Length: 206
Image 1 (tube, helix red, strand yellow):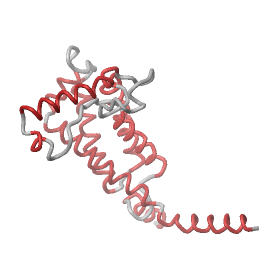
Image 2 (image 1 turned 180 degrees about the horizontal axis):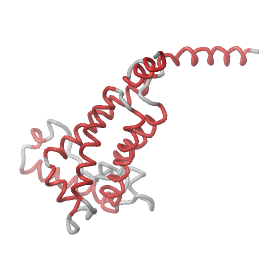
Image 3 (image 1 turned 90 degrees about the vertical axis):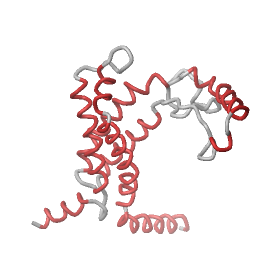
Image 4 (image 1 turned 180 degrees about the vertical axis):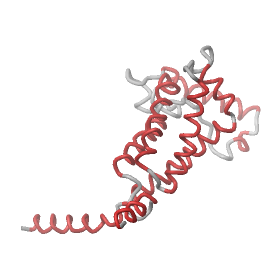
C-alpha cells in the first residue's frame, strides 16, 4: 500500500513537471548553437584554406568536390547555429548538422581514437577500440615540456590562464554533439522556448 502511494505521488510529480519539458531542448540548443556558429564562422573566414584542406590528398582529407563540401559544411553550421538558437525547424536542421558531425568524426578525428585531450590515465586511452598509442606517451611528453618551461620560461605566467594539455583531437566532441543533435531530432525545439512551438500553435489555430 505504501509502495503504491509513493509510486502514485511520483507519477503525479513527473506528470506535473512535463509542462516545463521544453527546458531540456532549450539547454541543448543553447549549448550547441555557439559551438556550431563558431565552427561555421571559422570556416567562413578561412574558406580558401578549408577548401584546400578538404581537397588535398597529401596533407589534407582528399575529399571529392572540396568547394561544394566546404560550402555545405560552413553554411550548415552557420545557418544551423542560428536556427538552433531560436528553435526554428529544429528537427530538420538537426539532420544535416548531425551528418556533419559524423563526417568530421570519421574523416578528421577517427584515427586519433576517442579522447579529445590526451590523458594516459583514462581507461579510454588504452584498448583495442578507438585506441591511439601516442596517448600513452602523452604524460611523459607533458612532464618534459613542463620541466623545460619551468627551467627556461615564465612558467607561472604561461600557466596563469590554465594548465597545459596535449591535444589528442579524437572523436569525443564530434560524437557528443552528434548524440545531442539526435536527441533534438526526437525532442524538437521544446515547448514555450522555441519558434517551432509558437508557429505550430498558431498554424493549428488557423
